[in-house]
Length: 466
Image 1: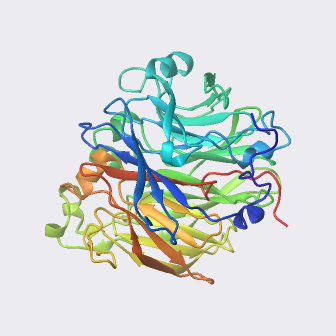
Image 2: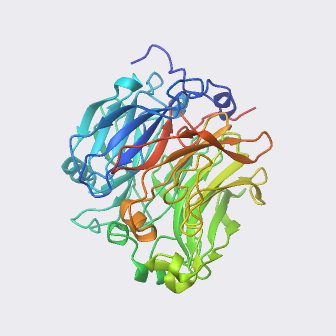
Image 3: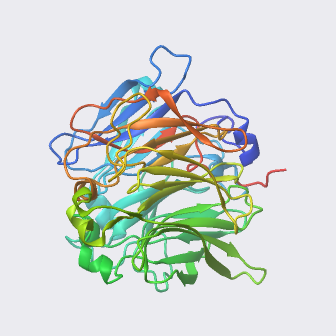
């Protein structure tokens, strides 16, 4: 335990933006066919370094078939909450779940170039203590580590609904389920919160049989994937309201609340509208009476395409959908970044007015039809996917793999892992950095990114920015 709070914990988002810039990034590597163990890449992101853009350390796991996907810190700025009993934690460990194996790795990255396994939690412990499987999103809360899951019990993960469980942030013991009353919630994906206002928001993807072996076209066309967001009394651990975004809005994924807790709104990305193949962003907000509303504020149109240029799954539609698969919000709550994995586009929206977003910048890279090359001349396989923003909002990083079986459906054939960076203009606009390109080991794909000292999808702030 530290004798004072970790200096990378910040009371407000505004103060976090003034912190030292990142010099390393942690990026997950997955073996799509399970023939090799998954790993963690430590990437040099210091432009003054001779190894800028290189993997300077790799850590591979002792098991195969984990399928690394999302991950997060053991502790972050939420530790500064007045409610915390852990103010003197250290941002030291990365919690990495295997979404396919339900195994969880605790990685000590105090010395990034000597990253090592601290603890492994086997799936049997997770099943026994929670009844959940397929751990997904990691968020460090004031009193512990919250982990969302995509599966319930049983071999196929459909024995009971998935949910959230809590881990001790010092021993990493699994404590148990979060929910005391889940209401109608029966699927899960992402979650985040407003700590001072004491509420949480969660979203839905699908149950394991709907995603593990690839998208199920019949389920998609029958609108059987998730399309509801849920609001929770955070301390009472109770679902207080659910909003159905409309069954045609299939796969309501990333939840991004405003970073300034004085603001009571946020965003949710929807992969596809089955009536028109559009991608969408909904803005949700809290009303004066304490209830919540949501409204579609961004739509992104599909692009007509010849059947010969489309994968088998899309040939009958004659168009390439955007496939909004990730979104991220800058710490000043000004710019929302939207990954259009199908089109091969990264969009930047000015959301200063969250009910009236304006397109401020766009980068073309990869894509099912476009196949846009990087400025360095190299092919960017797949499309922009997991996006991460630096604390100061000046750099946006992204990778290209969605989920192994979905990659193979939408982009047949091995396309290779990639990680890139774009520079952000003072008043918006995106420009790809031609000098930043990460080469990953052959046979691997890349997914989520975490930045040294925290990033825009890591920390929860407990005090209003002034």
